[in-house]
Amino acid sequence: MDRPEIILAPGPTPIPPQVLLAQGSPLVYHRGPGFGSIMREVTERLRLLYRTETADVLVMTSSGTGGLESAISNCFSPGDEVLVPVAGFFAERFKALAETFGLTVLTIDYEWGERIRPDEVAAALAEHPVKAVLLTQSETSTGVIQPIERLAKVANEAGAMVMVDVVSSLGAVPFEFDAWGIDVAVGGSQKALSASPGIAFVAISDRAWRATHEATNPRFYFDWATYKRFADLPDPENPWTPAISVMQGLQAALELYFQHGVDAAMARHRMLSRAVKEGAKALGLDLFGEGLDDNWTVTAIRSPESADADTISDTIRAEHGCVLAPGQGPLKGKVFRIGHFGYVSELDIIRGLAALEMTLESLGHPVKRGAAVAAAETVFMESRTP
Ligand SMILES: *Cc1c(COP(=O)(O)O)cnc(C)c1O
Image 1 (spheres, rainbow, N blue to C red):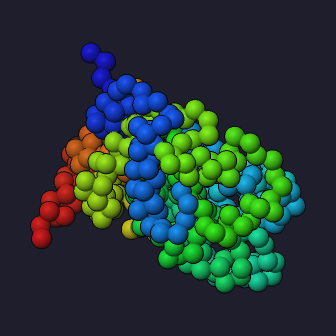
Image 2: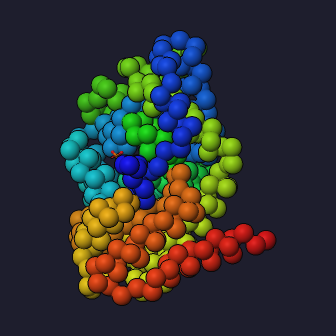
Image 3: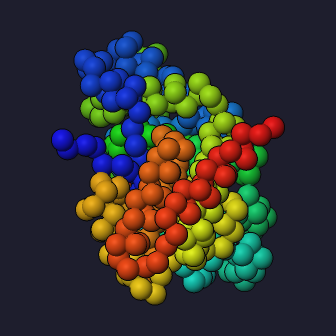
């Protein structure tokens, strides 16, 4: 019997049955009260997740990258200067997007896996003020959670707007739109919330709205002003036909998320992260990236000398139906990545670690059978004791 694959990748994450049922149920027509109440509920819950009382939150049918593109096209004109600290694949993508729209991009380049240093960003801004700083909270390619609160502080002190890719972090790790002084934060349905891919959302500050009034970059499908006009109808709508089924799923996913609440989700992510890291260490593997204690979304693990990382992720998928993520860019073949956020349980982690043990053994890397599983169980049992 073909079973669904065990997804331990950093997105899309596994989808709960309640969400599958909701998105498989009859379509709610996208104009009128039914969809209006879905829009209202989803938007209100997203505002709670963003921790904002002041920002507008717009939802759009698109993957996360479309949401990022909307930030660039709505807030800037060709020639506007932005600063992008680059320490991984998704910061590179943000930079490429900005360049595509004619922005002048200054960068601070880090080794992949490093944490961005707020004092270096402050120094760069003092030397050369820019209109905005573009940041990635969870740099999914390396597992590193960047210090957004401190980075936003130095950007604000220099008068720059702060735009953050929170696609793989919103709902997984702490984020404070209002308190940290964020202007734009872009999230997606398919990561920590465990809905299907297909919806992006953006939180937009007053300052970012003001920037849109002067911005001349072309936009039509992603024009925030159009989304806002439809969102403000008595029964909120999308301007274009939205991914209705995915929205029905996202509504169910947010309901599940808030059943236990934000704090419980964060605590779970932290525990699963520790279990994966302790499990990998118990197999003698080295963990990749700075700030491991804070990196609750994805863990990048260096492959042992004896095996290429792509071979490990390919083999574990072929032999055990377990999907891990390979390394990207300069990390290709050097690390593999385990996602541990969203609808992932303790036993999912145990299954993944067991599959990893057997895979390493079959690839000729000596492991003590059960060592990673035992280490993870220890983390789980310890987090149970009061
Ligand atoms: C997954 C992800 C994205 C979005 O990718 P899409 O495939 O466009 O949804 C953007 N940024 C980060 C950090 C991500 O992890």
